[in-house]
Length: 573
Image (tube, rainbow, N blue to C red; front, side):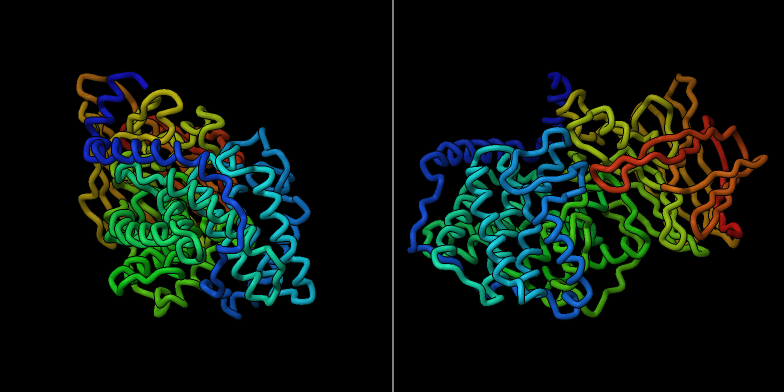
């Protein structure tokens, strides 16, 4: 990273964290130096694992999701991954090398181990087979990928989630009544390996923490609760309990959304706190904060979970497949007093910078707010004043999502570009600055811009985004009897003649019928009429990522103008 940009970062979002960041870096270096003498953990019978700490999913959850859980377990037993660009893979085989490292990161979490354990309850006649498969894969994993060696240990976040998955799965397997002589001692040694690695490499980053740190803490919490006969277990549990409470107040904003500028990461962080609640005690105010985050997930899912920011679909627990199914999170929340009764949380998330409006059968999101992560913007997009729109759960106007992180920097930057979001800004210029090269893939700096929602009523929403050089986009959205009307106005930089680009990326499968002065957007069940008063609309094919690791072609509408009034309204299908 060039010195001017490094100085800008150090004096900007990093400045409040510098002293603690240096402290954490020194701590990590010292602890990591000790790991070679501590790993692998010797197997002996003085250690064992507690049981029945995490309850099985409810009977209603099992009845509704049991078939999908069995299908996921069987698929992974046979090595049929078919997700994240990975066709087949089994524990013990070399890691896939032709995919984004994030895809391997997902595999490393070993979500399917919990599916194996649940399968032992769903199919009691096959209990021994499922539980033995679980044990054999834990042994195979530690043999093929010893502690601190290889990609599966490269990300402490994955190590922490895998630790939690392993201990929850082992608990559930033992709750089925299955047991095998000596197995407990082997699994607890693997757990201690994971805990020691996670403890040394935990990602607090001086307080510039994110979902990564929470995943570290969840794993350490599980180890602290389950492991007996290990002198460090109490330290792991106490650290995790203290820090999870601290991070709850920092990472979940007062409006119930997460400090990541991403709905996908909101889902992930919320799940990490909910799963933590199954192993530790939060007080009433803390539970209410988590409950608010849970209800925000419900609200977003009710309109199809619009992908604002990076759409990483990770969770701490996936029991039915790699898709982010939140049903188990809701099940746990209900049992830890966070899910009932459901809360009326409203539709304005002012701290996060998102508003949801339901109007004449349409669901619209309006985005204007901070980049998140305490100003780092690691998972934010250039999406100020952008909109999404769905009808009956079908996406008509979308955020492009994220299909990769580091494997293809050009694609990464294109998908988070302002020119792939439904907003308006000059061509070849981004709203936020990110440093050049790979280091900049997880930065968006907002120190030289200003964003504000000046009006947010049931009838009007006005968002303004401006930069210090004078560039300004003002979007005024009006909800009226016919639909929604949007007035876009762009002001060029001082002393510069330039034209803005207005963009409208469409959802998968939306057909475009261009007429004279208007366009009909047709979905599978509904249609939407688009009109505008100024400029020529161009139609192009672009790629979007409906889920991480997946890229699909779709249609994008655009025009070049500095002022335009346009409308969206329901149209007879």
